[in-house]
Image (tube, rainbow, N blue to C red; front, side, top):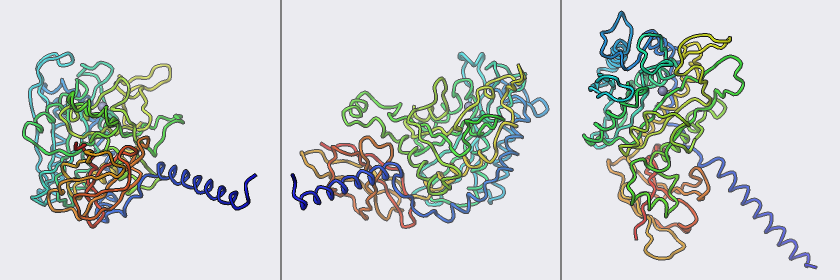
Length: 466
Ligand SMILES: [Zn+2]
């Protein structure tokens, strides 16, 4: 029998342990509280218009068939992919003329050699607009939003019959356009690129070319947001759709990793910590910062893409760039890659009437807020290392200062090895080395740069220094 005093102590210890467990569970659920929104970014998001997005999608659908293989046929009275490309270029130019020529509107055009879904060499045209960063020391950092403007029906090579592609992927193209229209009214220290690509349905050819050329010329692309099927399909009677959630798919292990890098990932348990996954976590954090939890949030999917499907983010991943895919919560396969028809009372085809423009506008807000946050934030710290020369229960992190002069300090992030997202952020001040009384064996660490206004860089996971 224990004395009453021992009993009281035991009860106190058990209660404290329970409270700690609850607190830790809450921290895991909620992650790190978001800083207050940047008022410039919040104001820009108010400009995003479902009506404007509807106009863009309707216009893209009006070209009837945006099949990539139609590119070598002259535009037939406003029909085909060339007509769509001309229209997109005109839209970017229009937005640019409204911001004192602030956008550089460019094309990336090339001849794609024949392959399984390219019967003969075919011209592919990517169209993009560059909002150059205002700070020469930061303008080299680039953030890309992309969607594919080509479309297809049941036959991947059919250039004759309608392939409206309203959701797949006029919706993603409209997101790039809307981000360009709204963000071009603002200025950011780093550079934002609004991209629309073709050749996706034939094998990701447009994005593959753009990513390869970017790598070859040494562009410092720090993040790519690929929006593909973000129309929030609103088929009547579909009770399982969720108009408040967009999925964010990300690879956890870099597609470009060498055998040596893979070996290190295996030995350190780094399977969920590549730059694309940090970007996905960043997007989810921006959603809690700028959008109401009841309206719209990001659902992280720790998988590179859906089963049986691929997308343009893969082209960037293969070149070593961080890239994620945003896609509606629940897809309706009757409205993708289908000839427009009605069979047994079911309507097939990717028609504009199934697009929820309010949903696509929320996706555009999330993209715009992410691009603006990243382009406002300091560059991430460089060469982040975790000292592992000795067996120690403390952990020492060292890094080189964020280049570009925007950082006013740094945060060390950590999470349990089983937690999906960062749970703790410690502001360590404007230093380049810190020791924290936490065992590196028990958590994952990262470091990010911050500025006085609460902008945060992408998180960088340390490399071990032996
Ligand atoms: Zn698509």
